[in-house]
Image (tube, rainbow, N blue to C red; front, side, top):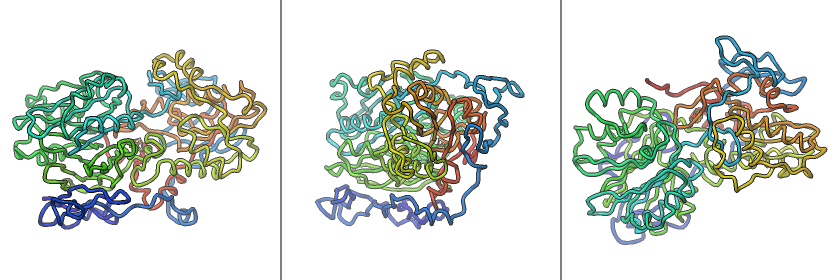
Length: 590
Ligand code: SF4
């Protein structure tokens, strides 16, 4: 039975609103301001239907005074270290730092690299900025009732390219068609759909699309989504953003019962669970609810059949998913609102954690078929993953990053600084915030080449060094003779930061102070983000002073975890920050 979307006050409280007697259905008609109204309110067809719009959430960060009064979780001492001073912070579980010379690389107890040891080489993908960031997860797009569904999906995937560059695909469905149509491949969206005929062949008025970055499963065209399977009720396709923490165990169980997997992706588990859902034959939504009721972890998933599109977000809402309305009134779903922007759709609202939307000829229904859980939205979406133009979890990503920079300036300022320089391009909003709050001029002292692309995705450390130099170049007229504050969004292994510091010194900087607009990353992610083993995380193995020594900066400062919590305000305990705090909402099941 369908239930209405929850009110904001009910989130995380475990109290579901009383279900109405009939599922609310909505025909989409855009109103001024982007709301989706019941179709009956403005045009023919389906009067008296429920509205799927929720109260808007404030995009403003909490006022500093109010935030200061709120209790916050504490995670250790301050996170700033300077050459010759500053209290080093030891992350949870990390060995204590004992060296300040980045050239040393001793081995610690148990064979683990000791503090100050250079990061090990794991063959990490280098992004276009040349950094060793955490990697994006995946992006999904869905469209229902749109005459140009495949093309709309294509534009949406373009906007979400930052979430995955390994492969892309689109699957379409036409009413009364006997099959789903698909096209997918390895590469960027523009490469996979480089031949316009491939897109034109995808007829139909409903579509789902996927950009892949592999967080589970090998890099293979077989793993590129949407995955397609045929049940006895017909073909079904699935596109998934996230990571299922109990997928290995479920996979073994399914294989012991005779399931034959075609991919190494955890997403295929969902299809097999749907196929073996004997209690709900015939109803796609019941099959989906039955299958997802058995999985744990992170999922924002779109499932397409011949006659319905089902969108589901896991009860903790780790990964984002938003609902929009195209100018025609057709509903559109996407990982981020930037995909709606490019397709000309208006943002309506988030798909709520634990919510299942069913889009069909009958309209849109909303249901909450799973046990409620406290929301755990991934805070890293605001730190690095999401596009700054997006609104994610009800907050402007750009505004968040500027605020991170302001808070960083307040907690780890550099009084003698001459210039604030962002590490392009993800460090730009935070550097603007740091500059505004500190009064130190912002300058683009490092320029990024836009023409290197993904050429230098290499596993060897030596080539990685060359890649950074090719992608980032200092502007000597900005740097020479200056005390420079370099602002980046995060440090993963420390390799890029080390090279950037050296680059700035070689360009004539008299001092280089590195500022990082998030807390030290001390743990891996199990919820759909590709993180190295924690032993490869420089802040797991080193305190702040040892990290500073390794990267060679005159000082190093992080946004404290307390500051991040203050920024999130009353929503702090509805965000996942496990890679900073070690507080994992769910642990993986082998
Ligand atoms: Fe996001 Fe970190 Fe939590 Fe993973 S562990 S969901 S990256 S905040």
